[in-house]
Image (cartoon, rainbow, N blue to C red; front, side, top):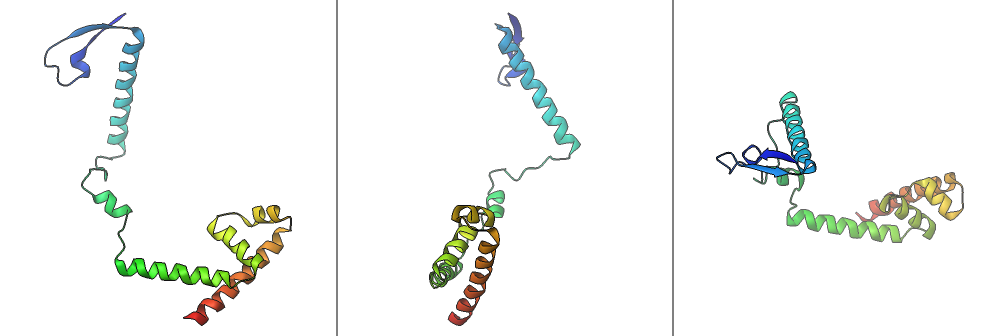
Length: 140
C-alpha cells in the first residue's frame, strides 16, 4: 500500500490529508502527473498557449459557416437541376457517375462490380460528364 497526499492532487484541499491507497491507484496518479507535465512541456515548446475551443463561438463560426436563405435556395435549385440532368443520361452513364461522384467509389471498384474493364467505366464517365455539361448549359 502507498500513502499519497490528497492536497497534491485535489486543489480544494487546503491542508495536508494523507491517505493509504493501493499501488495501482498510486501508479495511476503518478502516470497522470507525468502525462500532464509532458503536455505542459509540449505546449511550451510549440508555443501553443491559445485554443480556439474556448466556448466563445469562434471555432464554431470558423468551421460551420451559416448559409443565407438565398444561398440555401440556390443550392437546392442547383441540386434539383443536377439530378434532372443525371436522369436524362443513359442508364449506365448515370449509374457510373452516381457511383463515382456521389457514393465515392473508384472507377476500378465500379469496373469490378460490373465485370467490365476499368477503361470502359472511365470512358463512360467522361462521356457522361460531357453530356451533363451540354444538358446543364442548355437548361441555363
